[in-house]
Length: 280
Image 1 (tube, rainbow, N blue to C red):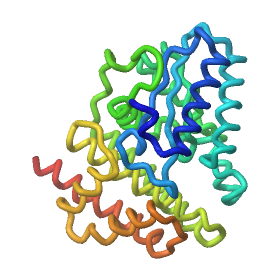
Image 2 (image 1 turned 120 degrees about the horizontal axis):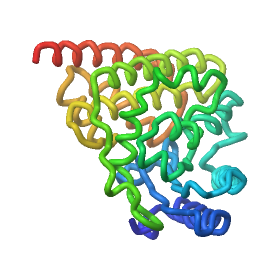
Image 3 (image 1 turned 60 degrees about the vertical axis):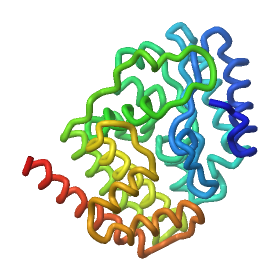
Image 4 (image 1 turned 180 degrees about the horizontal axis):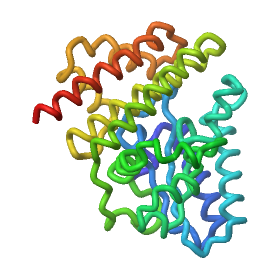
């Protein structure tokens, strides 16, 4: 993927992130990928992060991995993608210690090749919170990894993903995606009363549910645009919430209405999807 085609702020951050990774890891750096909204051409300043995936070899010292983690975190904060100090303390914790709002993930090559989901989430700090290991079995890890791998665009190094077979989606994974998104959306409602960041959690809940559901039914990678189109054409009156979601992505503001209807719509979507699968 051509870095020059990115927005200027993203281009500068990405170039510096790649430069620091090469400087810190040297020959241990295998490849760097871009995934998420920017890779699919759906980046928005108000709602998107950059989503860079760094693959290092298994001989890379843990000290170098930790140094790279700190360097990337500093670059994210400097270029405004981590939003530390701009949002609530609760948002800052989730932004720095979960996969929800951060812009970089570092994995070891062998974990990727073995499709070792536990190791990948641990190495990438996808849910680096208390009880993270205990709650991991309830996360839709296969769907998340599948969406990342099928959407990734290589920026540097050897293409480590090309020969891999992304995991096939299962109904149990979609149930996990529903539960995780539902809980996050309810969390967003409570947060909306105490911080302007609350609607960001509701947006993430809605985004991940429609992405995972669309990917499950189509058997391929998804994007926000494709998922919104799928829901608008498949479910009655979904234009209300999808339109509000798209507006918030372009210009974020706290929206109590959106926060309260997200859990309802997610539950409704999932009930209809369940009946559809049962009928077939």
